[in-house]
Length: 221
Image (cartoon, rainbow, N blue to C red; front, side, top):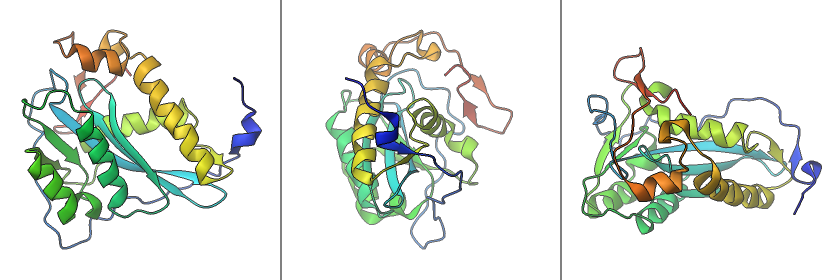
């Protein structure tokens, strides 16, 4: 079924929207993944981030949790506010879809207050998930999450401005489904995230260590 682009999108003005506020009193956790080897299986490391989506009604905020190995979006939530509820919804979705509960898992995020909140940290600890956070605020410390944001915005047009938030939510739902099930990655030997996540097997690593200290960047998309 085809859709008119103009029915969903309006021309977006390029702008910067801050989604991370680390100036708070809550405990901030150390970066556990900076010294680790690259992930070799699904559900070894989850990376989390929040990105904005524009609409005529104002900004909405998309919380994402992505598996660092398979690149599968494990959980997501879209809300009109930047409270902890969006990341919590995404985390609950990710936990519900977790396949390998007997294996150790690290959750990596920035130091935003949403991820440092008592409710979020408690949910991670209840599920025996180790907590890791960026230390310097550099995007290279959460490069995989930033890359997934870029794919959704550039390839699935989430960088455009929508007519309203409800329309944005519909497009986000469809985009995540297509991304997980249809979008192959060269770094996954041309498997989709769903395929790679289910296979959960060692594969040829097509990664390189970024020149920035201890920052991994996937160069293969």
